[in-house]
Image (cartoon, rainbow, N blue to C red; front, top):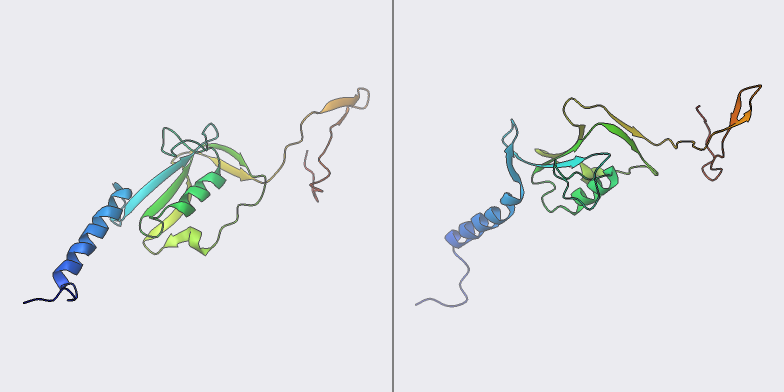
Length: 156
């Protein structure tokens, strides 16, 4: 006769472990790298949208949004996560602050990379627009500059 207070058997433990793995592993895509680990791929493009899914056909617009999505992803540290950045210049209005958790785990890294064959620039610079010709004879141009930023350097 068995009691209802018995501890679960080893077979029950194994079964629950398999169910747990089957539940979480499909969230990692079937793409496997050379190491055999599962991979999630996100994409960012200058013509993307932060309301998009982040796949190659519907990329995110900003690196900041990709970072937020990855931080919320329960598979971070379980699957390798690649952020593939399509060609273009990405202007940051504030620093992209990363911490140790943003790098993933051994064998399940988070990698930010230019898409294959593409050239990417990530810039914290602010563009100066609205140039007007101030003095035609001396060829002097002027533009309003945001003094709140108080840049130490100005390149024209």
